[in-house]
Image 1 (cartoon, rainbow, N blue to C red):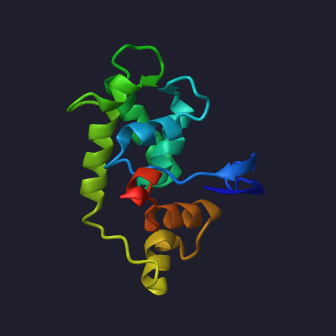
Image 2: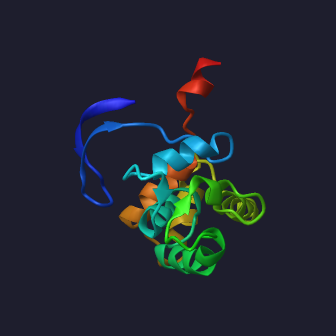
Amino acid sequence: KASGHGACPVCRSDFDEVWPVPSIRSHPEGWFRTMDVDGRKALSRQESLDALEAVLPLSRRRLEQFLEAQWGTWDASGSGDITMWEFLRPGLGMLAVILGQMDQLACRLVPDLEDAGNWFSYYAGAKGFLTQEDLLRGIMQSLEFEDEADSAS
């Protein structure tokens, strides 16, 4: 956790604290609670899109298409939100699908951040430059945060 005052580089919202994001693989409930920024105990479509952007190395447009294609399956209750149960639901839940996508995309191995040239090429793609979103996604996906439970052990 870090404190101070700043603004989100993506949405420009003000913030006073920064917390590490729990691993979606080892602490999915903590990850869900972190992505539930409005605290309603459910992920809206916007929260889901923002959450997906943090873990899948896809463009915003592809993430929107992916979210649209999966939403009806994930939102089993038809409420318009993804509850913790819908997130954790074995096989068809948001978590299972995200982890499957992460595993499929892992065959496109993300270069180590220390390998600057390959890292840049991976996130810049054919356009040859990094947008702010590309840079943030790349850094978030390259750095592995541990939550306090992992740090204590």
